[in-house]
Image (cartoon, rainbow, N blue to C red; front, side):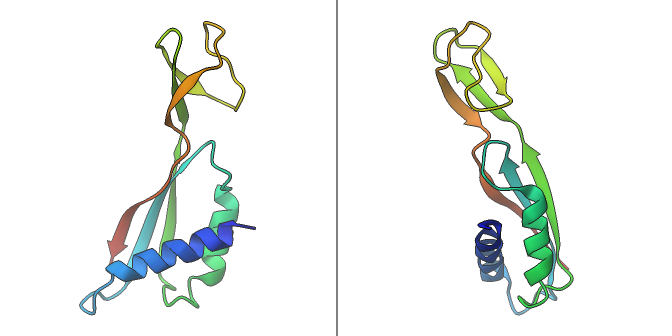
Length: 111
């Protein structure tokens, strides 16, 4: 389950931004692209399992899904991609990916 290593990396990153004046971290928001191999439910489970041990017992994980989008290299149309191997409306399978592969820490909420 690689979601655990993702959570550990997120917590390590979040702790770098915490200063001695901060009372704690209330929330962490991540954006997860629909074509990543990260399962949001497993990520939440792993976060819940380790947050207390990491000293972030009060922190909540907020997940923002990001729909995959690509620009067709043939017709130039922007297409919402539901799954890998999907063709554009013009029949092309060649896309420049615009979104859907990201896993970004987008917000840290301090208490």
